[in-house]
Length: 180
Image (tube, rainbow, N blue to C red; front, side, top):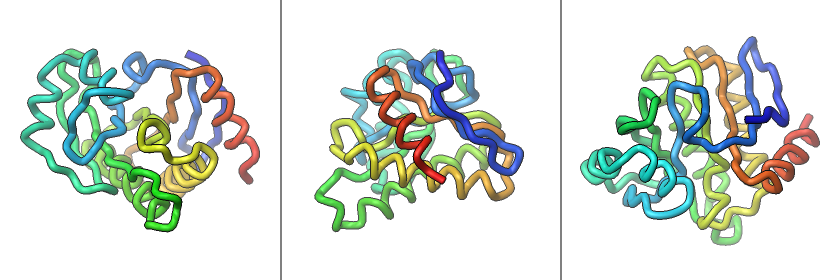
């Protein structure tokens, strides 16, 4: 695990790490989910395979989940208190409320973590995989949502943006470093 970027916000930390999300040293991880909570591929598939069939069984009982919202399940056999499933938008060119939906998905995941009394969570770059959201605008939206949330009062002390691919993590780091 490598920390590529970090920023202190209101006594709390927002960090970018290069790591597998299932190996993160946090209390909960966020899954980049689809509305049906069908965890077949990408980050969702990785989490579901690593945590065992219990995550999918619990997800089946919660689905469907509206885009822009989040729900949680147990972490199955993973060493977390919960898996938070945030449903980000599919990219359709940027004119169909994608930024608002992505902001809402991140905010919903962070709010749910705070409601669960969690202090440390890790999330992926929601919607930037098979949902096709371009990386730079997605990271701007995600970073803005995390920053605004950490400026407020909550139990969360650390939010980690986690990326496994060294190349993509490097791109994200460059985007975050260029922000004010």
